[in-house]
Image 1 (cartoon, one colour):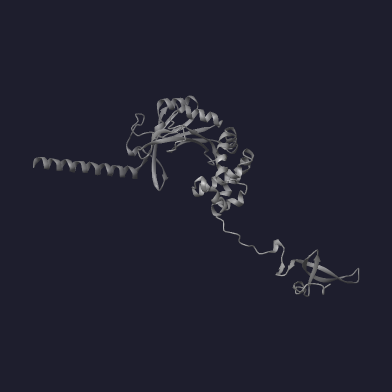
Image 2 (cartoon, helix red, strand yellow):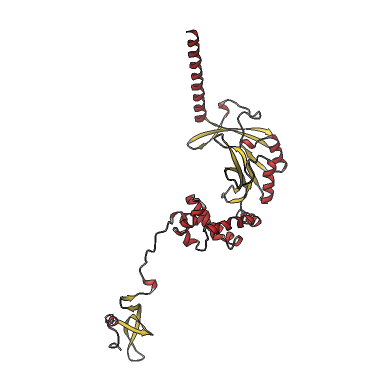
Length: 346
């Protein structure tokens, strides 16, 4: 049988190597001989399968082949994020069985790279996202149908957020505004941005757990919503208990506060310093402090009754800077007036 082997096979037939033909292919194995007492003779024993014999050499089985680099994928961001999204993958899969992988991949890519929707597929194909979520469909046409499809499943969204936040003791609520020049969003209303420019905007209501910061609910609201009723309705719609509404200075009004209290909603509202309910006092009255951004933040509280408390905060470094700016401004005004008087006299 050895003589019948082709030359390119025969050259691998060495001591301790067996060649076996199966069909039209040849296979090599490493062998030895061991004494079999029951048979009274030596018996061949296969130690290791070496692989398929080809004219180019012996091709080892897949599990023994050297790894080949098939391309370089961006991985760091996705390896880091995977530990956080493991907890939501299963409930997301149950809520959106056909779209969960696309949702996770798109969300991670947007978070890491801030890419527009038109570039999500490129990022997906060239990163570890393609290995984590191979079924993700992120082409332009796929995303065009994905977004409205998810948007229509409002009840499913609420059930998903309710499930992942069910273990939270308290939820915080916040309003974040987005400015947009889109012509296709009917909810936009004109409002002033931080630079003092009036632009169209809408607001996003967010709820999250105060312990783990797990999201519990989100909803888009039209324009600049400063109505306590809108906030209360959103809280009722979320069906989440123990909510703390956190709001900025523009939300405070007697009507809004009374409405929140009437609905038994806890709140924390930033106040303007010139409100009549704020009683200013000497710096020496600030007896307590904590550290924030390497500065001591002094604070005191005033009890207004009916469960309302006003907390006053004082950053002495900031106060000193403001006082220096006021003194400098006063100095410039006095200098200007002095020069004007001299010009008038002359």
